[in-house]
Amino acid sequence: MKKTLFIMFLGLMASLTKANAQVDPNFYIYICFGQSNMEGNAQPEAQDKTGVDPRFQMLACVDFQNPSRKMGQWYTATPPLVRQGTGLGMADYFGRTMVANLPENCKVGVIDVAIGGTKIEGFMQDEVASYIASMDPSTEGWLINYFKAYNNDPYQRIIDMAKIAQQSGVIKGILLHQGCSNCGDPNWPGMVKKIYKNMLHDLGLRASEVPIFVGETEYENMGGGCSWHNTVVAKIPEVIPTGHVVSAEGIPGNGTDAWHFSAEGYRIFGKRYAEKALDVMNHPEQYTKYYTIDKRLTGGLSALSGSTFAIVNEAEQKAFYCPSGQKMAYGDFKTAFDISNEAYMFKLARITGGRALRLVDADGNEYQIDGVTACLNSQDVTGDCCFANSTGPTGQRGYDIQDGAVWTIEYVEGKGWSILNKGTGKYLKDVNHPAMFDEPTYFTFCTLKEDTTTGIEEIRISNHGEEIRNGGYTYNLSGQRVGPDYKGIVIKNGKKYVIK
Image (cartoon, rainbow, N blue to C red; front, side, top):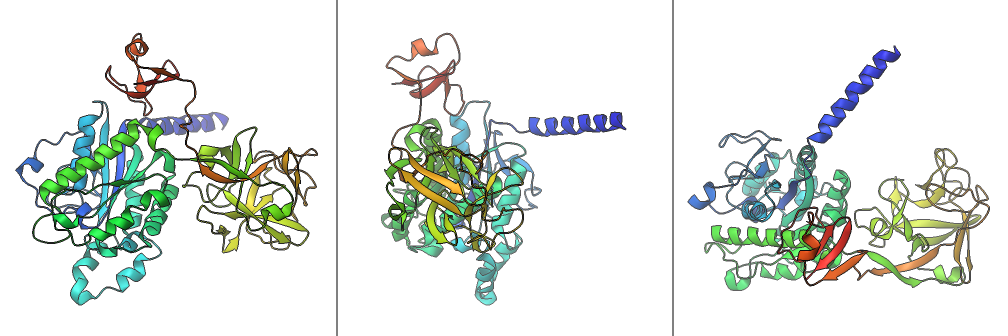
C-alpha cells in the first residue's frame, strides 16, 4: 500500500512539474477590454493582414468560423482579434510593436474581450445583468447579441480566458479603451478601479506587477465627439497608483463619425500603448508607486479618534494588511500597501470590554465579511491572526476565541503603541505570532504618503556602462538581457547599477 501511494505521489509531482514547465516566463500576456475602439472598428488594409510575427499571439475568446478558431486556443494575431466580423483595433499594433522591441526569446499574447457601444457597467458583474435588462430589443438588439457572445458576462469571459493564458505565460498588464458611452461620467474612474481590483483578485495578481493602461478618446480637433471624457481619463493615475494614460493627441479619426479612429489611427494608438508599456517595463523605478510612513499618531487614544491609520513595525519595516477574505498578512510596505489587497488601514472603535481595530480599505470604507465589519482578531486554533466578522465579543463565529477581537491599546512615549488581546491576555507581535506574548511589541500607528524613493538598494552610478557589462551578462529590472547601449537601472552579478 505504501509503495502504491508513493508511486501515485511521484506521478502527481511529475504532472505538476510538467504543468509548471509549460509556463513560459518570457510569454508576456496582456488583457485588453473596452468598447468599439478596442473591439476594432476599422477595416483591415492589406498591410495589416500579412507579416505578423508569430511571436505575437491572440487567445480566441469566442469561437470563430472565418478564420477558423476555437475559444481558449492560441493563434498568430492577425485581425480580427476579438470576434468574427470585428476589424482592426489598437491591440493589433500594440502586440506588433511589443515583439519588435523585445528580445527574440520573448512572445506577446493578448486576451481581447470588447463590445462596441457598451458602458463600463458591461464589465461589472454586479451591474451587467441590470444593464442588459435595461436595453430596448427593438433598437439595441445588436448590443444584446454582442453580450450573448460572452454568455452575458464579458468580465467572467476575461477571467476564464486569462486563467487559461496563465497556464502558458505571465500576465504583464491590462489595456482599456472605453468611455464614449460613459462620456464625462465622474464615477467612471472609480468603476474602472473596481474592475481592475477584481481582475487582480480573481487572477492572483499584484497591482505593482500588472499596471493598467487607459487610452484617451478622440480629440475634438481631430473630429472627436466625446473629447471631454479625457478630463475624466486624466484622473486614472490619481485613483489607481499603477494606472497610466495613453494619449490620443493627433491621432486621426475615421472621418465618417465622431467616435472612431481610422486604420492608421489604430496603428498609431496601438504603438503608443506599446511604447508606454515598454517604458514602464524598462524603467519601473520611475513609475512604481508605493507608500510609506507619513504622520505618526502619538499620545493617548484621543489621538486615534476619527483617524484612519496603518499599523507598522518600523524596526522590521513591515505592516499588517488583508490580501483577501479573512486572511491576515504581515509584509514589507510595498507588499502591504498594494492596491490589489482588500485593505491595509484601520480605525479604532469602542466596544464592550475594550477597543476593536476595524479594517478599512484604501478608499476609506470599512471592509466587511459576510456583510459585517471586519475587525483584527486573534485565534486559538490555527495559531494565526485573522479578521473576524464581528463587532464585539458576542458576535464572533467559528473558531474565533472569546473576546478575540477586543484589545487594550496603549501608547508609550518613545516606543509606540502596544496591542494587548483580552481573550488571551497576551500581546500581539505579528501574523505568525499572534496575541501570545508576555512582553509587548511596539507598533507605529501612522498615516501614509507616497514614497518618492525607488526602493533600490546597492546602486552604483556609472556614466560609462561598458566596464559594468564586460565579463558577463547584464539585465534590466524585467530580467531581460540588455545590450551595450542600454541606459537605466541594470543588474549584474547580483548588484544594481544606474548607467547614464
